Amino acid sequence: MRYKTAMKKQNFYPFYFLLFTFYFLHSACNSTYTSKKTGYYKIDFPERKYTVFQKEGFPYTFEYPVYAQVVKDSTYFDQDLQNPYWINLDFPQLGGRIFLSYKAVGGKSTYKVKQADGSYKDSLGTNVFDLMVNDAFKLTSKNESVASSIKDSLFHTQNGITGVFFRVGGNAATAKQFFMSDTTKNFFRGALYFDVTPNADSLRPVVDFLQKDIDHLINTFKWTNK
Image (cartoon, rainbow, N blue to C red; front, side):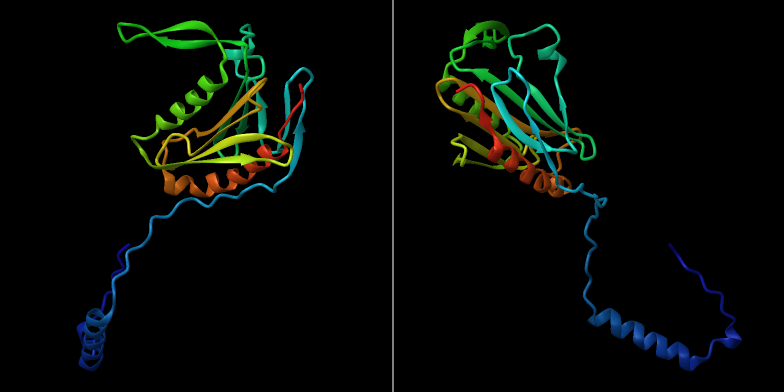
């Protein structure tokens, strides 16, 4: 915004003119220019409080934030009962979603099988533990073109749950992914996504906030079908 000051020549004393000129030149020669950082909207994060997800028939239970909504994706829950235990955790206030999928080791699921012409066809196959682990790593590696880094770490919780956590740096579509399994019965996978174009800088406060909620989910996770 420009400010204009009207001054009459007869009221503009030479002394003040010289003093102002000297001050201006002195400041310009000795001051350092500092660019302004790009700003983002301030986010008011909700108070942390958790509730238990424990539904009859589900092979797992865990605690999740009260400001999240458990949503059943119609793709898997309307009439297709091949994956009856797939749910999403929606965070309307933060524009995020954690996709949570489950497969029974040794069970049947629909897989995309690549054909000779390069196209993919749905095919019913067996859930093999080693192959599901490989798929989890492949799904994460799909972000390599935009990711600045991909780090994986093995974890084991006090509830006896073992899994792998992936941290994806840069402007990837998903910054956090993980999977857990007992290797013989159950395989559970999670991935955090946002409803906006990925921007690591602007999303970092939200990602950091939700990281603690993901940690809590993992640390309270239990299998119920042992």
